[in-house]
Image (cartoon, rainbow, N blue to C red):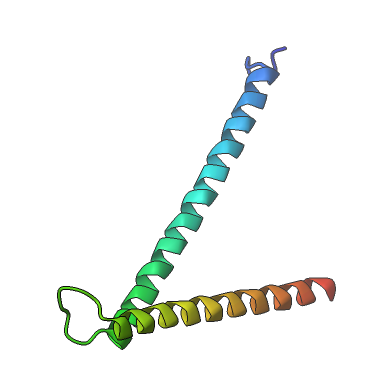
Length: 95
């Protein structure tokens, strides 16, 4: 069935589906980009904190430091994210 502009309603449905698919892909790419930015951030922080003089391999002390640093960074990130979500949820329920 054609609308007043000569396009069919079926093609509009297809366009809407394509727009949704593109939006979903864009959201996934945005999330991936944010994740990569976080990896770079904690790599920089932990590298500066844990690395002494670079050698041919990481010693166990440096490996442990890097692992602990990344785990703490992730713990704090999750804590802040969850806390922020709680605040947003609380504010929305107050409306």
